[in-house]
Length: 346
Image (tube, rainbow, N blue to C red; front, side, top):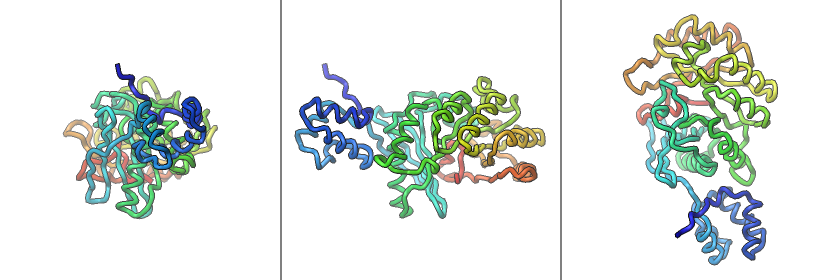
C-alpha cells in the first residue's frame, strides 16, 4: 500500500534540517530546500538545481508540494484580474488583482467556500469544503505578484484577506501564511500593507491583539443595529454588537491600530437615518475609518444597491463627526470580480 506523501511545506526549516541529518546529509541542505520552497516559490523538486539529482529523487519519494494552479484568468476592462485557482485536490477558489494608478492589491481567499451565512454574499451560498493551507494562501499572493509585474510592471503592493472564506475561522493557517509573506525568507512584504477582514469574530479579534499582529484589521459591519445586522448576516447572533465593540476596543488598546469598517448600503435595508445614526455612534467607540462599498447584486433578490443620495447622506453625517469615509466603486464588473464585495481597496 502506497504511503500518502506529506506536503513538504508543512515542515519548518528546523524540521527540514533534521530530516536531512536523519537521512545522512548535511543540515544546510534543509536551508537550501526551504529557500526554494518559499523565497523562490518553487512548485517542483526538479527546479532545485543546487541540490543533487539523488537528493531530489529522495524528496520526491517522501514529499509532495501541494501548489496551486491558476486554472483560468480573466482580465476586466478596468484592469482587474480574476484568477480561478485550482488546488491539489481539484477544488477551486478565487483570487483577484485590483490595480490603481499607484498600487496593485491582491485579494486572496482563506477557505474553500465559507463557514458563514451572509445573505448578500455569493460565496456564502457555497458550502465550506475545507480551510486553505498556509502554502495555498501564499501561492495566491505569489501568482498575483507575478501578474502585477507582468501587466503593470511593478510588484504587488498590498494584500487583503477579503476573498472566499472567513480568515479568522482559519486562524492558524492564515497567521502562518502571513508570517511567510512578511518574512525575509518569504516575500518580505511589510505587514502594514496587509489587511485581514473579518465579519466580526470577537474572540479571535482579541486573540490577534494578544498575538501582537502588525497587520491592519477590517470588519464587515454593514449595520450597527443588531436586528438589521442579524438579518444581513444571521451568524452574528453569536457575535453581537456589544461583544464586537468590546473586542475592537481591546484591539485598539493593544495595537493602537485603527479599524476599517467595510459597509455596504442597500436599498430599503440600511439606507435610513436610524442606520446612519447607529453607525456614527458605533464609530465613536474606537478610532476608525469607513469604506462605503458599492454593491454588486448577485441576483434580483432583496439586496440591491442603494441610491447615491443614501450614500451621500452617510458621508455627510460621518464627516460631521470627523469620521473618514470613502466610497469604493465596484471593480471588475464585466468579469464579476468585486472580491468579497470589496472594491478598489486602499
